[in-house]
Image (tube, rainbow over all chains, first blue to last red; front, top):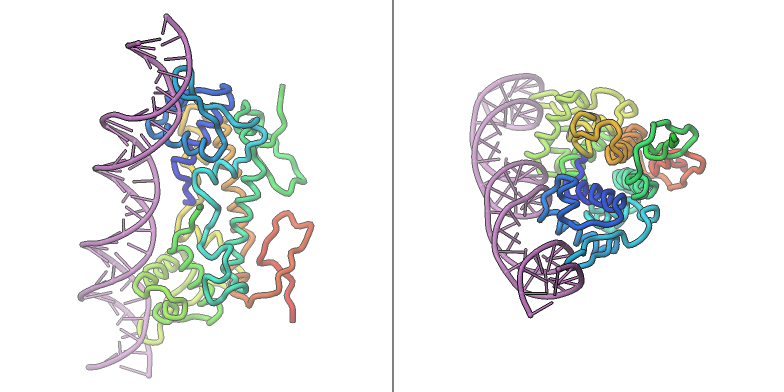
Length: 153
Length: 153
DNA sequence: CCATATTCCTAGTAATCCCATAGGAATTTA
DNA sequence: TAAATTCCTATGGGATTACTAGGAATATGG
């Protein structure tokens, strides 16, 4: 479980495609990534409203990244599609229930959120858009990130 | 987002209650934790089938932990309610799509799963059941865990 | 100027999942 | 034997998800 919605998966694949191609139309992204065109249109529009891509209408139009892929954190992408990371309602509001600030379950959920948040902040779109590399995990990293691997050739 | 289902939240609160009290009936747990009795019955039954609690029927019956709270990892509890951690379908099966083993999005999701998994393996039910403590984060920890804090008094 | 390619906007919809609720059978014990 | 409990099955309303449909608005090449 902890299923990530198809919408978010589509957004990420679409952005990786746009990063690699340097910009493309919704229809061409959808075709290349095997995603429903009309559905993807809405997703790309949402990414535009969040400032992650920019769009040009009309012929020769399409979507481009608003900034270099290396400056787009994956947490921004997830936030654009799903909003703030909030595993439980009370996670950043101790006034939700009577246990308040000293509630152990709440601390537990905060820890979970922080784990996810730190990971999503450690990966950029550029990491996802690049060609695959041989996977060699570095040791002595506080966060073991499968995308930060040694590049061969 | 990344919302945790109410069912899982209930399971955790119920288990923390059972750990503190040393065992209780579904009805009393539900009352104390403000959870629907009938719904909680099903949840506790599920936890029993997963071997996390044991039950006694009839008068004086109820639920107890199957082992010390310090030996029950939170990942077991989450798995009991939601099954395996799998953010996307392909996460541990490279044959799902044609990109296979060298798919960058897939590595990305694996990293996310590992982050969550490592956190949930680092916390036991005992951590959640204990009385709240003043929160002092230790530095130089690879995983910053808000539940592992310095105990005062 | 106009056909075409594109984004942008709104509405609907089938399927699925979530959070219960209901009723009662089976079991144990005071 | 009555009461307290777990255990089992079925049902339903509400929300969310993943689309589908239709077309308006906008830009551009010829």
